Structures are given as C-alpha cells and as structure tokens.
Length: 333
Ligand SMILES: [Mn+2]
Image 1 (cartoon, rainbow, N blue to C red):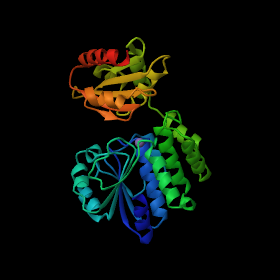
Image 2 (image 1 turned 90 degrees about the horizontal axis):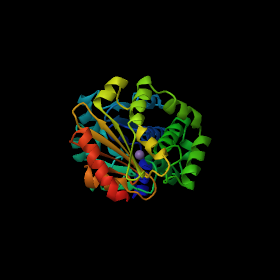
Image 3 (image 1 turned 45 degrees about the vertical axis):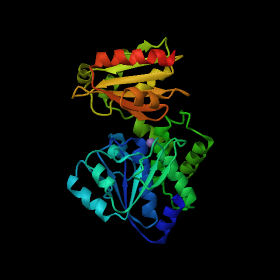
C-alpha cells in the first residue's frame, strides 16, 4: 500500500496537506515537519496544518515558522480551502479524526482526496482507506524515516528534516528508554545524525528551556505523590489551587507522570490534573506488560498505548483518586 503512495508521489509534483493531532507533541511536530521538508525537497507543494500551537520549545523546531506551516486555531477561515486544495492528505501521529480537534474533524471525515494515515497508535480508524499503521513502532517519526528508506530518498534528507525526525524519535522514546526502542531505532537515529541532526541541540531546546512555572508545577505534583497497590503504583495529583500557585500554563505538567515510575518497585504511575472546567485529566504510564491503554479504556474513557495512555473523569479530584486507588489494588495485586 505505502509503496503505491510513494510511486504516486514520484510521478509528478502534488499539492499535499499534512495534519497532526490536537496539542501536537514532539513526535507530531517532528514527523510533520520532517515529512514536509522531505516532500518539499522532492518538489511537492506542502502545507502543514497543526490543530493548535505546540509548546514554545517545539515552536523552535527547524521550519516551524515557515510560511507552509498553519495553526488551525489561529486561521479557522483557511481550513476548508486547505483541504479543498490538497490532492493528498497525510494524517500523522493520530488514529481517528476526532483527535485533530473539533474544527478539523469534519474536514478530515469528509475529505474527498486521497487520504493516508501514518501512525503508531492502536485501533486506526477505518475511515482511512490507506494506512501505514504499526503499534510496534515507537514513533511516527521513525515510520517517516522508514518511508524515506522505502523511497530510497536519504540523499534528499537535509539537516532540518533529519533534526525534526530525530526529535520525534527522542521524545516518543523517552530518549531511547521505552520498550519500543529497537536496534532499528538506533540505526535510524544514527542515520539522522549523519544527515545533520544534532542530538545535543534537540535536548537543550526541549528539556533545558522550561519556564519557572513548570518547575513549580512539578514541585506541587511531586509532593503530592502517594503510594498505592502495595507500592506497585504511584498517584500524583494537581489541584486547581496547586496550578494557580505554580502559575501553571498549558504543557507545564508534561512528563511529570513519568517520575512516578522512577520509584523502586513501581509498575504504574498516574497523574490527575484538575482543569478549569472541573474535569479531571488523567495520564497513565506503566512498565513492561502492564497495559494502561486497556485500564484507561475500561475505567476512565481513555486509551493510548500499552505503556502510555490518557483518560478523564467527571468526578471530583478526591473521588477520582479514591476510585483509581480502589481499581489499582486488585489489578496490580
Ligand atoms: Mn507519536
């Protein structure tokens, strides 16, 4: 299937639209910009459409400020035209149109051109007739690199393309830490460094450029740490009051949940964050075979990957925490 798409791309220049999920993370931004740089080097007209703005550090990614990048939230009037003009739409790093937000969802669902999904999340939506979907892959960026290999296109990979793809691999693998990291992941990373990506620049840009409010948010989150299920789980929480005192801005709690897994014997870590509407947003992380995708799906209207998932609760923070702990006990016993 994907070879058929690559063959089509080689025939002539195309008008191409690339989209990602809402709240684009390092892999969404990296795969979209990496793929865009590659396609542009191949002679195509490319627009990258992010549903909303990514974090400040991600906005420093090579090419992010280019004219070919559009933030849907900022320019809602242009969305229909962007979809209407595109002959090919690549949906990157999400599995179903609703993940792209309410403004883009209907445009993706009703798109008349050729639509290709490239993603590593579970349960790809049947709406995407053509899909390169593999949960075995640690990142969409790694899958883009595989496409470039299949296209025999490495000579066309410039430093901007390489740095974006390596950024996606680094962020989605927790800096080559998660179980999805394979020998091939390292081989791809090596190839990207050869093509001009700078691992130290990526790390500095993403991990050493936090606002003070993030440090304080982590402070509140870490001091809330509660052991559960005989030490096999850690529950972290951030109340609205904590967030106010920290001066929280969107994105400040990203990565916090991973710290729960740093405790000896812990298999599952959960972060509960109260949002302005009173909804409790939940992040789940696990080690090994503990499937938080299944757990979040079954109990908290969520899902994701085996070792990283999200969810939500409409109960209060205290009620959600109590319910969560009572569910973790028998699961991890
Ligand atoms: Mn991803």
